[in-house]
Length: 350
Image (cartoon, rainbow, N blue to C red; front, side, top):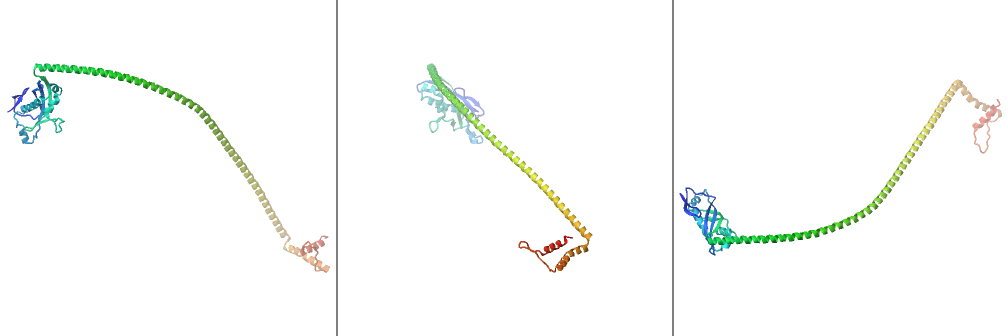
């Protein structure tokens, strides 16, 4: 059976247990303190705790029971620290900074002397106190309670007046800021209005300039386009005239080619007819000559051919001449023609 301290404030032997819980859990206690100005106060505190042990290690588990009344032991140690810290400060300071004073007293500070630790460890049984909460802080005697009430009332009054003054000052400041903002906005609006007016005048001037320049530009562009259209029309007309002249020349050339071809074909036809006529006449003459030769006979033709020379020979023999020739200086000598002429003159009378 385990006997633990209980009740508020803690009293020994009030709790009997068959087992010890390892936590986390909490316990409460009331501590009587006295400040350096002899103000006695009752402070009700609440502690969060747990045993930081390794359950698989039998030695750690056995250390939980090394302190018989861990509740009473922890509450006494913490109460002692709180009393010591409170005895060094005044009631007013403690009332104002009670949470900071108690936590610093319970947990202590780090090595740098500024940061408050976050836990209190009891090495004997590995009990860890992880947090301290303040529930009630009240004076023990009536005189101190009255002084505290007056102090609280005065503090509330001072705070209220301070808040009222602060609110009044804040309202006046906001009013002044609003007024200043209104004036600035008014000045800004006037500046914007002047700026807008200036922009309007500039836009009007620019519009007039654009209008005049646009009209001149439109006229120049229209004239340019008219000249361009006129030039293109003239070029097109020249091109069409050139094409017409080319077509006309080609037509005349084609007509001339056709006329020349027709004339050539006509002349060729006439020549072919003349050639055919000459060929036919030649064939007729040849046939006539052949027929004549066939009709006369070869012996008759031979006799006729020999009759001329023989007659000439007889004529020369009768004249006692072997031959004669008449000529002048301009005509060449042709004995056969001379002889034929002589013979012709003799034969013509017959």
